[in-house]
Amino acid sequence: MIKEPHITEKANIQKELHNQVTFKVHKNANKIEIKKAVEALMKTKVLEVRTINVTGKKRRLGLKVGKRPDWKKAIVKLAPGENIEFFEGV
Image (tube, rainbow, N blue to C red):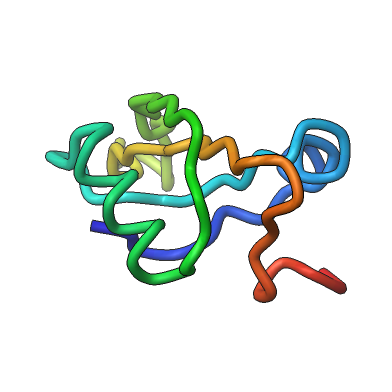
């Protein structure tokens, strides 16, 4: 379900201000599966999950045209007082 954390400047601001953490997830995962996976792996209480399908950018290399893969992003809102130790100090 969860592939890796998505660490960007915007994700760090969301973590500090709104207690939200961002993950790259499997393309076919739904909100309920993501919530259960985060609660089981990270041992935290999840209030809300938002998902976004991110389309890959088109890239050119000379005459050849390619495309980066599409992926899915999940923004997970944690309960007040909850945190994920992995993201502390990042």
